Amino acid sequence: MEPSIYKYPAIFRRVHMEKPAEIGAEADFMREVWRRHLKRPVRRVLDVACGDSPHGIALARAGITVAGIDRSLTMIAAGRKAAGAAPIRFYRRSIGRFQLPERAFDAAFFMSETFPIMTGNQALLSHLVSVGRLLRRGGLYCVDIDRHDGVEVVTARRLWRKRRVLAAGTRVDVREYHRPIAWSSGLHSIYELECTIHFPAGPVVTRDIVPVRYTLPSLLELAARASGYFAMVACYADLSFTRPIEKCYGRWLGVLRRV
Ligand SMILES: C[S@@+](CC[C@H](N)C(=O)[O-])C[C@H]1O[C@@H](n2cnc3c(N)ncnc32)[C@H](O)[C@@H]1O
Image (cartoon, rainbow, N blue to C red; front, side, top):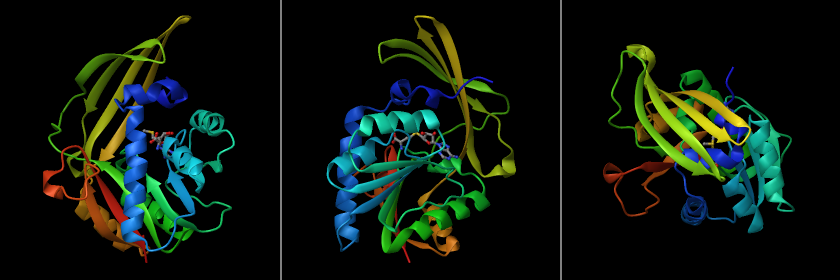
């Protein structure tokens, strides 16, 4: 089987077209959300699907205690190395259902638009229950979701985009495909990411097949309530406190409060 792009932590961020500077802006925005919606200091934070936890490391360096969960050992190893002495602990867990040997957190977050990979109702609810059990009452869960719009439903696997990027000094040919979905699935698309990484010792091909649920603020609000652990308190477009959600360009942040 071809490996996942997450086997290559130094490369995946460039492939996803994310810029390192975005991390600081996202962490700052979250801290402002906490100031507005949580009337007590945030001392302990959970980073969900943390990868190498760039947000967690930034917060830990600012004195917040962070725990991160991810299923990829390679990403976790990269995070541990990058964190150095910063107060952050990593756990290998699946986001669908998990527990941690940790005291309750003041806040949790799920960044990088990965939340919609939980496509089934059961996975979505057991995820929210898992996070809810780890949060103090009144604690906040910030969920970052890309704007789902304009994806063509295909009946056969089809090339969507191809591009070439330079990541950590290595050329990567990226091909993105859309795959067919069943009408009844509630999915937005099945996204396939193929990367050919041209290492000096020879090329390596990675492949990730990612079903994506069509996730709107109304679905997040419903799932939050249905979990019995959360209520949605706000929804912000494009890291802005003033842009209306209808004018969202790229992504939105749902803010859930632990009830
Ligand atoms: C796009 S990366 C984001 C990482 C990090 N939050 C960031 O902003 O850089 C998505 C992460 O989700 C993790 N992931 C995907 N599916 C997962 C699952 N079912 N359980 C746990 N982690 C998962 C991957 O291993 C990867 O590290």
